[in-house]
Image (cartoon, rainbow, N blue to C red; front, side, top):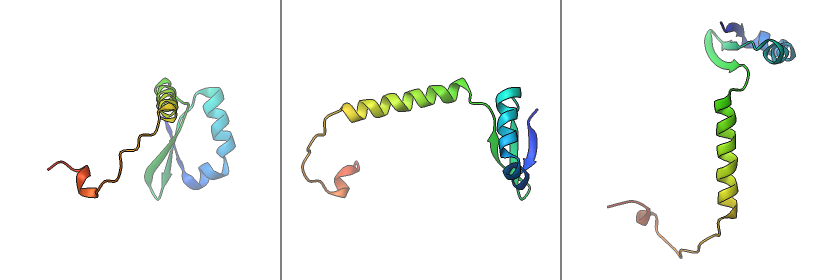
Length: 80
């Protein structure tokens, strides 16, 4: 189960939280003013997949040549 921790405490012991995440596979939910606002936990395979997909997209866009389509007006961007 995730441990709920106030933001002020998480800020004070952040290094310890990261160590527990890394070494013990722990997860923490950080709260601010009684509301859950963030999660601190190990990176999942899905997140690693998103990172790979983002890098592949950026590489493809960087390699893609720029096309000069001439001047255009804002209203030409929208279907009528």
